[in-house]
Image (cartoon, rainbow, N blue to C red):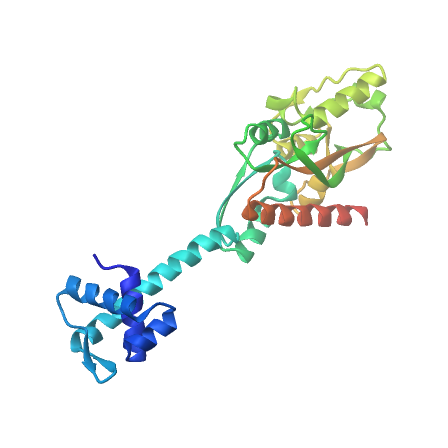
Length: 301
């Protein structure tokens, strides 16, 4: 069976016209090169070189073999580069967990950032809620996630990347809305399937309870954009994030108005991961962090 080592010895001999020179270029003893060439000739059942003085002259069979030998070596080198590319995050698959409304903060923009810089990378954005993706990270199903904090798990690394303000949205202009007013107005709230675990729901619930009230939304839906559509019809008000309103500005119904809450309420979003990260995942997290920090800076203007 022909080996790559035999082909390299053959090509070096062909290039240098001497077994001695070929051995010197490859760093082997001359007898070793001679043996590899002999084995190759034996396997192919041809003579590849004719001895002339102290050198060798390639035969017609050697000229026929040379392009195929070069191609074989090039293919192996390319395979090595492909493997190295995975190590160097040029290719591979990144599975990143996201909370549901992260599509407004990241979504297509993050995918574009990754694919423009590293077109060989595959991206999977997974999850509907912070509680869900944090459980995946905790169980090792995902390397990392972008999720709302606090994160009750000492085994995870948590790096805050954005702070966003919760605001009251309705068709009527409003002064800052107090917990008492929030408790008495009809509300439509998203994330109904995750209402027990949802960080925003917990924040609203605890705020109203501290003021002696109970959070009782009139309508509950899954999608924050649907909640805004219902609010735009004047059927109920909603509570959402300024970042979401900012990103939806070009398609949000023009009759909607927002007002701050009093006291002000915020959600903090963080990069959460376990003890080890692949280079590709680290790269995607850096791009996600940059996107979210840039959005927070825009909201502060």
